[in-house]
Structure formats: C-alpha cells, structure tokens
Length: 600
Image (cartoon, rainbow, N blue to C red):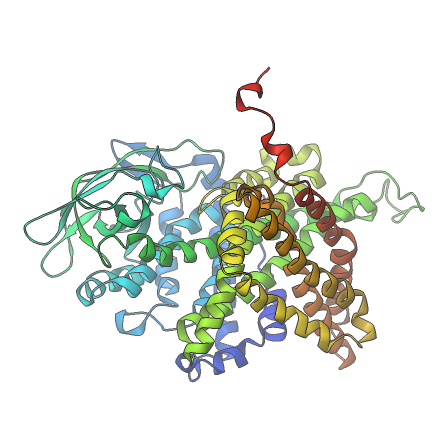
C-alpha cells in the first residue's frame, strides 16, 4: 500500500500563493483576529503527522478486515477505535464549529483541507467523523436553541457522531417517494418508523452515541418533496441532564457487502417508532437537509482529489524504481539492466495525468472552500449572495467532475504498476475500489449533471454561469498581453466564450424538447469541469512565473507547476472537443430505439 505523505508544500502553494488565504481570512470579521498563516500551517502539520502515522497504516487493515455485524452490533476494524480516540484528543472534530458550543471557531475551509489528508490516507476511516460535520452544520443552521445546547457540544467534541438517513430501497435519489413515517407523540416528540439504507457510519463502536438526521413524512403531508420533514433521532435517548440514557428504537438490521470502503459500516437502519425531534419547519425538511448535502458533496469532491493524490504518490514512487526496457531514444540508466519506466512517454502520460488532476483538484476544492467561508461569514449580504451563487454553480462540477477524474487517476495508478497493480499487495486496486462509490453517493454524476445544467444554469437563465465566466473573462483580459501566459490565456478565453455559446445552443433545443437537457447534461458537466480546471491551472502557472521572476530559489517546484499546466492544456484540455461533438449529436440517437428492442 502506498505510504501516504501529506503534500504540504503544494497545499501551502494553493492556500497562501494562489488563494492568498491570510488576506481572505482578514476580510471575514469572524476570523480577522484569530487566523494567521502560522496558525493554519501548524494545524496542517499536526494533521499531516496524524494521517501519515496513525491513519495510513490502518488503510489496508480496514480493507482486509472490514466491519463485522452481530445482532445489530457493528465492530470496526483493528485500530480504528483507537485512532478515533486520538483524533478527538487532538481536537480535530471541534475545529470549525461555533465557539459557544465548544468549537474552536476556525474557518470551515481549514477543516476541508484537513479532510483531504484524512481521505488520502484512509477514506473509510474518515467517513466516521466526516459525516458528523454535516450533522453539526444542520443543527447549527436549523435547530432550536434547546436542540443546539443538547446535541452540539457532544457532536463537536467528538464524543458522539452523526449520520444522514435519507435513502430508502425503493427511492434511491428520488427522495420525493420516501415512506418513513413520523407520528406525533403527546410530549411533542415524534415516533419515527421506517427503514433507511446505505447509511454510512450508521452503527459502530467508536463513539458513545450516534445522532441520526432522518427524513420522514408527517401525517397528511403533501406528496413529493414538498411533504418531507427532518428529524433528529439519537441512537440512545438522553437523560434529563443530556447524558446517554436508554436505547432508542433504532437498530442496524445489517451492513452491506461492498466493492470498497470496507472499513466503513454502510448500514440498513430500522426505526421502529423511535423517538425523534423535528428540526426546522414541518414539510421543509428537504431545504434543511441541503445544508447537510452541500457539506457532503464538497466532502465527496475531496474524495476524488484524495484518490488522485494517493494513487499518484504510489505510481510515482513505483515508476521511479521499476526497471523495464530501454528508452527508444537511448539508455537513460546505462549502469542498470533496464531503464526506470518513468522515462517512457506512455508512463509519463499516466503519471502526469494523475498529477494534473490531483493538483488541479486541490486548487478547485480549496477555491470552493473559500467561497463557502464567505457564504458563512461574509461581511455583507452582497458578498454572501455572490459567493453562494458561485458555490451553487461549482459544487456539482466539483462533486461529479473531480470524482470521475479521481477514479480515472486511480485506474491509471493500477496501469502504471501493470500486473502488480491488479493484486492487493501494493494497494493500488484498493484505491480504485474505494473511489468508485464517490461517483454514486450524494447524487450520481448524472444527477449532478442535471443539477448543473438544468437547475443552476438554464433555470437561472445563465445568471449563475455568467457570475463565474465573468471571473475567468477578467483574468483573461488582465493577462492578454502577457507573452509568458499566452499559451494558457488564449485557449482559456476561447473556451470561456464557447461555454456560453454551448449553453445557449442546448437551451434553444430544450425549448423544443426538455429531454435535450438530459441528453447533453453529462458531457456539459465534463466540458465545464475541464474549463474550470483550465482556469485554475492558468492561474497557478501565473503565480509560478511570478515567483520565478521574483528570484525564488524553489526553481524546480515552480517549473514543475508551469510544466504541469502546459501538460494539462496540451494533453488533457483538448478532451472538451469530444464532449462538444457529443452534445451536438442531440437527443435523437438516444431515444429512437424502443426499450423492448434493447435486448436481442
């Protein structure tokens, strides 16, 4: 298994040089006094030490052992519980939570950066505390003061963990047809009855209590998504003083046998008139739930980044060491019996693709996280609204595009290893298996694509898209006379314009038949993702050029940035042409064949 090494230098490059994090925090009143570059770097170094030395060694252990289920009780793999205890002792659960409930009041973006390290070193383990963050955010935003005081301190400290209970076996992503019921009790609580599936970290032995955030229907609620309410349902009921009391009627019926993430318990959870408490207004549960879902979707985007990074690290180390054949242009290691495979162009293409997606994905996730900070803590309503628009547009791109290219990067890691990548000894195939789920949960790639094109772009008449393409346009205009950036700025500016033209073409076809949106959506999402990463790679190349011009001694680091940006523009960005061509093919080739004629 690749031994994870946190890429601190690249993280610092994105944070401090590309995104000017210290200036960013200084503009947010909540962080002006307490967030400095030194503080951020201290947290990153502490997280790196924990992930490299505690979590990474448990990654294959969790995959090999998996979780065990016995009459509703789930036991996590060897070492998981002890690692969680240390995680809590280090104070990581409370990092970005509100101070009045025991949090440290630091930016959420810092927590997202740390989650990258956790995910890269051990994704399955990271899902246990990771889902708690969404529960905390949901209660912070929508809970009553009593609910906040009751649940937040223990969730924030890490003594308890949280889950998101949405999916049912017949419903999948169509939450409008869920059947779980919530019947009023005389004391103001509700009796929750139903079965939820695919509940990550739904049962385990790592914390004293588990707080489930559950979607259910009240009696007489409207049909569809307009009749869904949200409830807090703890695994253990609480005593009068807020401590763990008797067991609630919540039981893990089974755990799934999965392709990957074996170390995380994916549960069937049964609610048998379990005591629950309404959070937020009646029949507005879906709105409140999206606080959780947006957090989860950014977290899933991190999984794509983490997969690319961990697979890249393993592939790079192997390619430098593995000897096979001679370079066609002559021996590069004549003293050895063969050349290291990293000298071969085909292998370099695999590894540079991983590097471009890992470092480009990091820039996109951190960029997104900074906008999330502004939505939460921006100084003015205008700033918060603009940031929310950018976040709304980019979240489906980040979730779907980064998980798809992260999965591609993971597969390329196996390819670098050849036959050795197919066996479990080296751990590269585990990354592929663990990452495959990222394209599915929190909304499949296809659902994210419909959200992007249908809701975020066409339903806003392009307003959200224009907010972002204006940012790219301003960057291109400001640098159009920069000869050193010409190779990046010119194609970026052209694609930015084409993005708007492509949107208009799809919109015109959709006016004749709305199914044209579904036919174009996935390829539109890929186009959007490649252009978004191109913008960030152009900016990273600019920063690197500026640092070299200023006389930086880190010549190799900054030259590598420029070279990788050039690789992205010349070898990856041209993929957009195939997506444009597919979109031009329209709906007709998809719908002509009758469903009964698919089989032969």
